[in-house]
Length: 202
Image 1 (cartoon, one colour):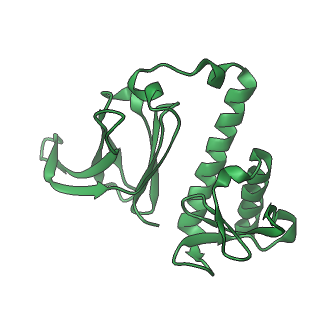
Image 2 (spheres, rainbow, N blue to C red):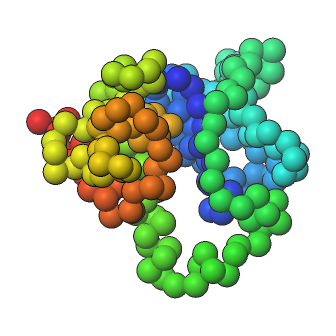
């Protein structure tokens, strides 16, 4: 799966997919617009992430740097060895990140917060499934998970039904047409993800 990041401005959370591993960061733990944080790969190698977005008019960018460890276990960031990650997906209101002001309607009920949390967890599961089981789409070069059980091939439009989901959460029907994931009800999307988990667990 291609290196990428996903940012939720409302919750000020960032998810990094790097070298087929997933890392999650709380942007409140660093400076607004210039976030730095170290993380460790599965093989024990330490890296450092920089999320940079000066204002709402700038495109967000993530850079991953090599971290050197000397004989005294002191860590130094080598900014000459940089991996720039430009592929990203964002959601939420930018003001909720830059101004730390949440939309009251977004937090009006405990039930809404729980729903958002469940959706985020479901999408995280989807990312992990793409890394482990993603394959080439029947209709394009995209990496997808295929929906083969008719009970989960939900109608999308004009009698066409869901057959694939891309690693950017785009839905593809049986004619190759593409849709934003928001065309599915949250409950249907979570049913599809549950189905895929069960499918690949077998």
